[in-house]
Length: 111
Image (tube, rainbow, N blue to C red; front, top):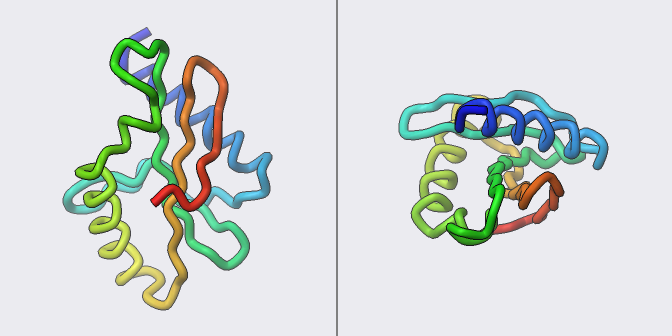
């Protein structure tokens, strides 16, 4: 399985996991200037930007550890740009779904 296939499979699993947790998945792989939002959801009235990280082994660290300061800054910037256009008054939250192996874990309000 290629890296791209693994990434898509991880995002599929994360989206199903989020829906089972009560989130409403609005869009996936939202491309905006400067980056991409893996999954965009609603949790009640809150717009949730979800970063999905998968690690098959701990060789390069944990999946959560891969959401570093640079990635968080990028997500904040592109989410602000996106929301300014489609939902300027929306409350926004950043969650992370990690897949260490095949086990999904939701990190609500991760940053």
